[in-house]
Length: 354
Image (tube, rainbow, N blue to C red; front, side, top):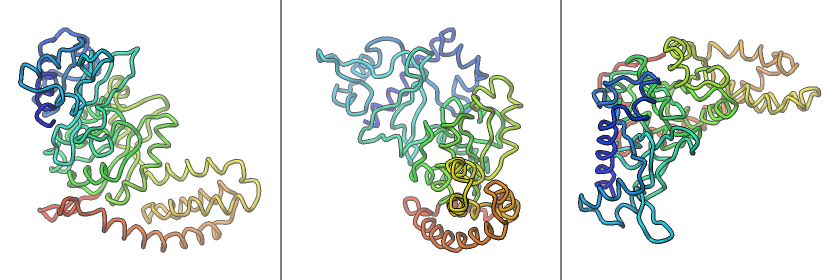
C-alpha cells in the first residue's frame, strides 16, 4: 500500500507539471503560489488527479500493482459493474503524512461545484486523525525554530508557509484536532508554542476552542490568530499577504477564545446568581490556563461580564488552578513521549518562547 501510494504521488505530480496551462496550475497561481512551489523546489508536494475515469488505475497497473493493492490503499474504488476507477478525479492533490512522514494518503481539492475537499478513505495505513499535511515539506524549517501554525485547509497551510520562514503552516484537514496530531506536530517543532489560525466563522472559532485541551497537553503556549469573519488564511493571503502577516503577528492566548465561547453558552442565565456562579465555575479552569500576567485582567473582565465581584471570580479561579495543574501535569507526562523520543527535545539546549 505504501509503495502504491508513493507511485500515485509521482503520477499526480507529473500530471500537474505536464499541464502548465491547466485549471489547477492557474488556480494555484491566482492564490499566489509561485513556480518554485509548483515544481517542488520548496519541498512542498503538489499534484493533480486528471479528470479521467481510470488514469491512475491504468498507470498503476502498468507499474505492476494489482487491483487489490489499489483498493486497499484507497486509491481506487470498484463500480457496481465491477470496474476499477480512480477515487480522485479533476482535483489538486496534497499529501497526507503519518508520524514517520510516510505518504499514506491524499487530500484532493475540487475547482467548485463538487465536494470542496475529498480525503482518502480510512485504510490500514491512513486515518485522518493520525496524519497531517505540510509537516514533511517543512521539517527543516520547524527544526530551525519556525512557529507551527495549525490551520483547517491545505490551501491555508500553503498560504501561511508562503509568508516567511518564521511560520510553518500545517493542516489538520478540519477543526477536530486529535492527540496524535498534536503530538506529531510537537515532535516536529523546536519551539514550545503553536498558533491556531482556523477560519473566521463560528465553526472555526468553536473548533479552535475545542482544540485547546489537546494542544495544551503537549505545547507550553497555545495562541490564536483572530481572522476576520468569513475569511481564512488562504483568502487573506490572496487578498494581501500583509493582512495574513498582521493576523499571525497579533495573537492572543487561545484560552481567551475558549472563555468567550464558553461564556456565550451561559448568556441566557446570567441574569440570576446561580447562572452567574455556574458560568464562572465553567470558565475558571480556562482562566487558569492564561499566562500569569494576564489572569488579573481576565478576572476583572469576567467579573464585569457576569456581574459578580472580582473577589468571587478570583476565588473560583484559584480553586481551579490547583486541580488543573495536577491533572495537566499527569497528562503531559504521558503525552510527552513519542515512539520513545522526548517530544520537543532540543539538542542545542536553547529554550525559545514567544
